[in-house]
Image (tube, rainbow, N blue to C red; front, side, top):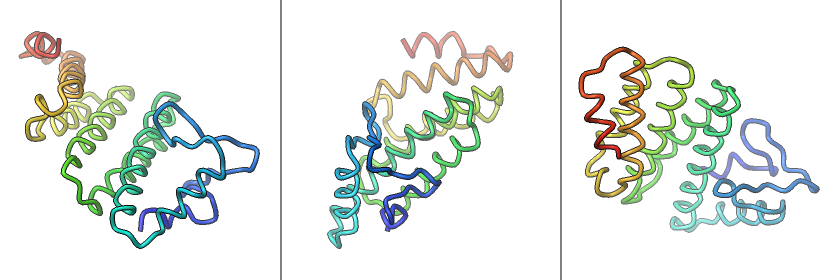
Length: 171
């Protein structure tokens, strides 16, 4: 199970939860105290499939957001590690919206490559983001962001074909 990796109140990559430390953020781990975190982890070990599915979605969000944070501070290997962990959990969940979550992770991996100047790889991940069924209708904000990111990456590659159209559609 996903939450098994949180045993002994520590995250899989060495982050430890200390008694005097608050874990919080606008949208990521969503815990203000260690007690809330531990309570959530215990609930995730429940045998209820619904609770485990919710736990995995929370874990995906947490790893995706950790990937964003590490990318922003130029810790690219750690960023990619967390994005990969998020992607691994998609195989374990049954959720009708999982493709939207996955598209968000793909877009963020594209941004990671963009920050590293790996524009070809970035374009590939933005293409993965945009390839999901009906993204423009189901999540128009993500669609516009990914389209704009792809256009910018192509511009950096001096591939201007379709760039103006993509930027315009993103608006």
